[in-house]
Length: 147
Ligand SMILES: [Zn+2]
Image 1 (cartoon, rainbow, N blue to C red):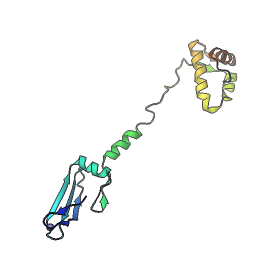
Image 2: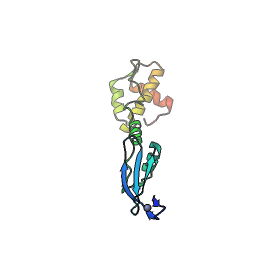
Image 3: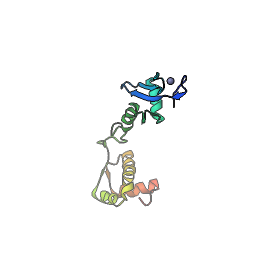
Image 4: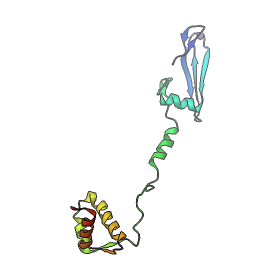
């Protein structure tokens, strides 16, 4: 982006720039021959456009505008906002010792899923205590051989 002094046909030099902080931008260019000046003013949206294009004005690119901060705040969000599970309800079945021991041998990366499958199975059948017998029944009924 260049400004030419029409009368002198010279490229005008950058004189000063202001970023008042309200999102507007003011840049002044002066003709080296006749000292005539022009000022460029942009509104916040135009300033944002210039900043996003990385346009250099007066040797420095226009700094990132507050939009960036807003985007970051939205992206980080509140932790736990999308937790997929409420705390276990009181009606959830309990695991007896042997069943818990067998569950502990399930690879950890699927254990949570397997545990939930058995717990849902037991809850649907009003089974209060999950035993290895219940696990065997569930495996047979649900076709979960190997779990
Ligand atoms: Zn001039």
